Image (tube, rainbow, N blue to C red; front, top):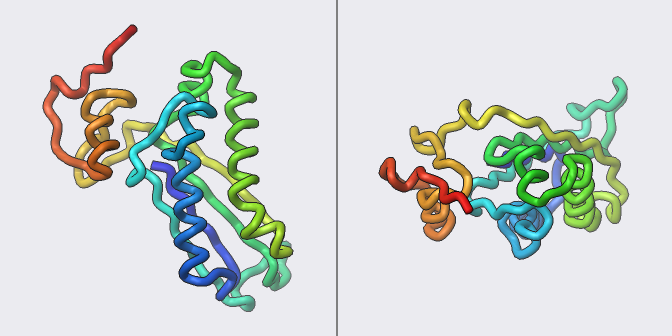
Length: 167
């Protein structure tokens, strides 16, 4: 899971723009550059993007109504910054720099280029607090997770599929 929640002014995006942005957000974690930037590629279905359209009279920043502001909250569970840094052999700071550079590139045409202001934050939740379809997701890079990646859905797995090969 990355779960992205975008709190936007009502009608900020068309249905097609939402779908395009959701695909580009998913590509951050499961696209051609994710492995090179973070050392991993997640199953696409792990990424969820939810748009919350807010009426101008219900969106306040600093106590004042604001119709050109977007708030984005992201929850990461599937991987940690520390784990990604270890996979890549770089610092957590560099992982975060890579991540925010990718996020900025994806969001710019939808936010800054349209004159919206943005607040963005990421929270990390413990892996052990996460379930998909009642199952604990398989460990990163395990055969079960690779199968989930290939099938783009969850499915039951055996204990043997949870063993992560070491090099």
